[in-house]
Amino acid sequence: MTAAYETISTRQDGNVLYATFDAPPMNLIGPELVRDLVALIEELTDPAAPRVVVFDSADPDYFLPHVDMTKVAEYTAEAAKAGGPGDASLGMLFRRLTLLPVVTIAKLRGRARGAGSEFLLACDLRFASREKAVVGQLEVAVGAPPGAGAIQHLTRLMGRSRALEAVLTSSDFDADLAERYGWVNRAVPDTELDELVAGVATRIGGFPRDALIAAKAAVNDISLPTPADVRADAALFQQLVRGEKAQQRTAELFDEGFQTRGKTELELGSALGRLKAAD
Image: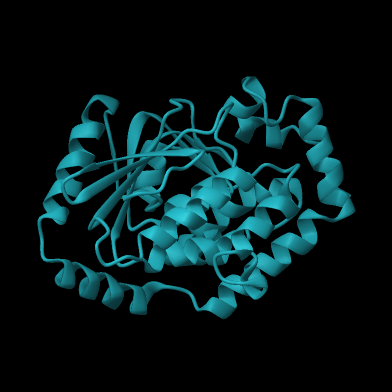
């Protein structure tokens, strides 16, 4: 790997690349982070790329908390560079991540909500800290359905009723409940997480590349939504999140400290439940 990134630090250990999100003050998904993801995904298409990539966060409280709601147009424009104007969405960018000829593993500490959760779902494997991991889909509480893969992936992983619970309540899920529902592969004590993920990544990285690629492609053929489904979800999200109702509810959140380090973001599931009832 040769590229240098503004918001992602990388190090390689044998056949495993460790990619760490580091975008102060709290790893919001904005144009800079999306630009780096586009570049990293492109680099990982190279046949000489490592066989396994482990994503984690330098911030113990926030993995990827959600998109930067003040820069929707800007990060969408950066996402378009991965596939052209017709695919200007995080959903299609994350689909490219899922289709990479490498195995992607998310090591989750901190909060991954909204598109942060959808990034997790685009990874092949997800392992979470029992004490420190939180996942959630905040979009419906704000005024739009998830638009970057959550509806497609969660329904396939959890089944209809549990996916509806996750999406419609916009609640925070701790690691144990996320494991029980299938949101993550495993939740383990925080002290065991690094060793577990390193062991899984190193083991997979020692297997033949062709076999890894073929097996992943076969599972993808069975389990992934179509590009048309991903585009439809993205279009609906982008339409409603720019609407008056979503803008009003987002403004209410900003008044409480949204997108700043503090109680509102740490306990966002609770904050969403306190928003004024919609008409």
